[in-house]
Image 1 (spheres, rainbow, N blue to C red):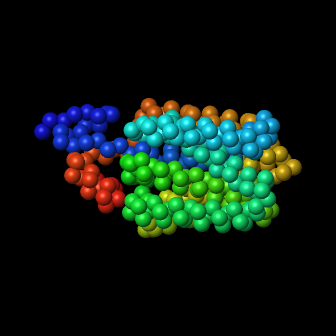
Image 2 (cartoon, helix red, strand yellow):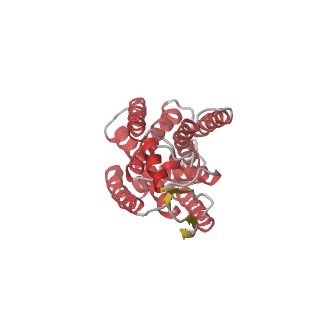
Length: 281
């Protein structure tokens, strides 16, 4: 049997290369995810306050950029770290702005926004599963699955922002206590996963919780000492974390350690997409 090489993957003749559009879940995934959530919190504040764009104008500008980047993300045929993680950073900022617009501009309470976003996210997951019979990120190989994936990501950020603000501000627990609470919850879920908790459920639960964790870390660094932070400011905090994200993305681009590959024949591809399960392959 002859072989061909596609994107550095050896593909037997008669088979096709089916690329997953999102990265493998490694330690780098979680580090960059938390960094992105921190940037989402601090950079939104930077644009809104420091540059005096205001919530509405900031939302329009970042929203337009996000749409353009997601267009590129959907257009490319495989996972490209720079495009993917730029989209995540922008979604993080937009998720923060959605919650801030509801609470600051429209006066919706944090309790209400947290509950509403939790319900909306549950509905997204329900529609995704009803359509694809899976919520696994190991099988984001069609435009429809990718659309569900990014919609879920958006509402995890909006929910995480609302929940994080509710704990750290509404309950007056402070940023450092909030950071410890969310880190502890993530640790509990990680232990439960090691003990047999469903992998997909564990992933999405931790993904949601990393948003308020990152937001609490960002606020604890950026906010003034009088407000319970370390006083680094949104500019310094944002660019420190953006620099760290850039360094890690360059590393992932060069090493490809977070790339997942699926090589299937045509019959396997059709059966796999029909069943909604790529993991066994």
